[in-house]
Length: 266
Image 1 (tube, one colour):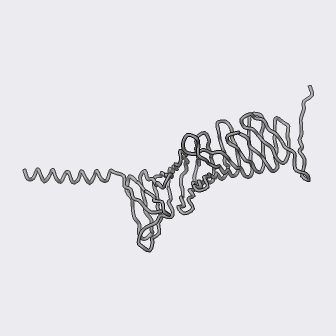
Image 2 (image 1 turned 60 degrees about the vertical axis):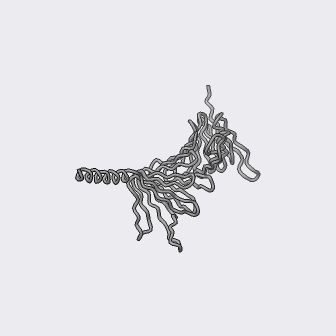
Image 3 (image 1 turned 120 degrees about the horizontal axis):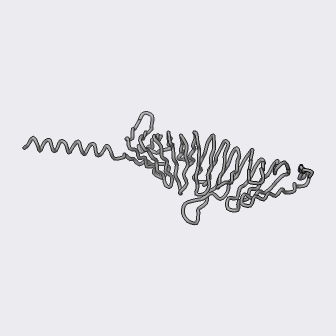
């Protein structure tokens, strides 16, 4: 009987140990006055000589409204004079997902600078989804928490339904939406700007896209192409909602509006 009781107690001990190992481990750190919580299924390693914590297995880092998901997280910290730890950088590795205020971004790797509050995503298929709008990029995507801004670099595209704005760099600005979370209300486009509508193709050096009105204001070496007709000027407005394009006069002393109209004889 005593043997059975001891065996039962021993089995309960092993059960409790295995139960604890199945629960995701979490730990909280100080980070510039706002705590960072790290959670992982496969445990958290502490490398004291390198001043880094490594979390593996469905890992996520939570700081305020920002949550970063990845297969692996590396939290780098500094030691204070009092002996406490303060996280200054978090690296996310493989299958990264970033969420804040209802917006979601994807990438292969990410670096979150705690002090500047900037998250940088790199890798293939970079994408940010903000309600009805999507940003994609080839080289890099950043989220600037304090500025409420996302920056897409390298073959960047802003998409809303079938409307697309192309540029080397796109900067999207957020504001609080009426329902919940935030939404993109403006996109600035820099270098090799291109817009394609059902009727026109427009190009320029720079553009400002008012998301609500659907109007894109183009400046610098503006060119509008419709069929085989080409119009050139200093600035233009393209309404993505109506498909109507307007080319404006240049200021005095600059080149005037010009165009080439091709007509076919019947």
